Length: 394
Ligand code: PMP
Image 1 (cartoon, rainbow, N blue to C red):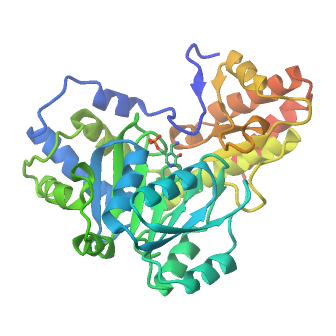
Image 2: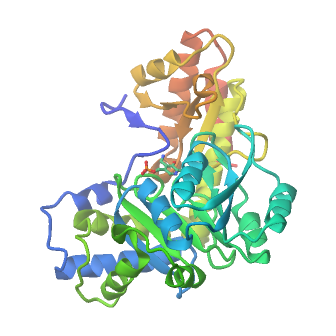
């Protein structure tokens, strides 16, 4: 067993040694040549990772995923404007609360935990009022549910609404084509599949989203205003120093390393983002085969399970103390998060470097299988491990 426990929660995640090396340096000046180069390269790499067009504006701001959500709400929506929220769990709830605090008139279409509103419902809601924007959580980390972001963005565009996605638990792992799908804002944080520690809020805005900020009546808080940050981002991309608020220099250098690594994802003839998405799909399929072999049931309804994490119901007779038993076997997983049913399921993150490390996936399955047996749910753990191997090599 490795000495250090393996971190298999849905963020923060195991990260690359090269990324750790990149941020483990004495802090450089934010206007040093190296930081300017790394910042510019990171912004260009973001467009590639988001599959965004040249007009799209990337932002890297010190902060959390929550801050990135706030930035989206405050830069697009004026008090009194109508927005539609596709609600799939804990983080959608947070988005709704933020929008209400901004003064927006929020209409929610809400699914039961583990579900997602269906396309017809979204379509009908969009047709029922003149919404400024549709907000959705691409993968809600509390339920492990992934919405069909392509279909939602398309529906929003057809109804003349902007589309905004919280991609904190999806970016750089779940398929996203910001330009092709005409997504307007897609935001994330550094501590999940981006492969960094927490500390950076990352957001890409379309040209339409930038125009929405320009025509806003009520200014956003200064520290998250697109208008304050845009000249800074543009200066760094042009290789020039600039200052509005001190950037997280060492994390930005690490971001460049991680994004360039993500873009190099290489599986046979495939490369770049398609390979990266396929790698996450394959690992998720392999783990789902293991959960099946262990006689476990997922929280998400069929077809809605994300590739970045598994939300798994405790089998009969097993409770949340099982998470501690997995920890004793050297693997850290997470308990439930959705307030309505958090004591009924656990969560396993599978994003970033571990999806290319079969031995760590197997170690996770083994620890979970043995801990479940210890708690009375005894199943054939070697069959689960075989299922993983088979899927990974399929
Ligand atoms: N949205 C989603 C989908 C998340 O998973 C998280 C964090 N788990 C957040 C938003 C908030 O991010 P942070 O904790 O960095 O504020």
